[in-house]
Image (cartoon, rainbow, N blue to C red; front, top):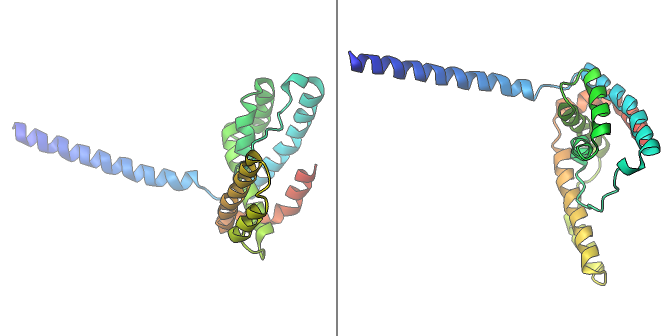
Length: 195
């Protein structure tokens, strides 16, 4: 009797495990869902609304000014999630920006940042079409020419170059579906970033 009960429990645990794995496999594609026009349009509209918040913050709260950090390790493929990280140092602005993101249909500021990264990466991929890949050999030659610079400056330039190479790889591997979803909005994205 006991052995029979153990077999039933083992079978139930196996079925539960199988069900859990199946659910995980169903959830993963939903997380990496395609960019829809409505999502891109909501993101772009939210950016326009956020611009006035940033302008007001700069004008009325000088101590909440965003630091032009000396970090040369800039990752252009994390443009918006990086901004979300920076906003955690500025709670009043973070709350206002988060409210705008939610008003435009995003679950959270973090989700807004991740979607913004995908949109901007696809936008950069559109602009990289037909362009040669980053030439790491040319970068090394450039570094060799700078041997008279102070060591700290050389390290900063090296960081920037390494970051450029990493970003370029991500941009060149942007999903084709993201690129095609973003393509009709490329001019609008360019205009927003020029603002």
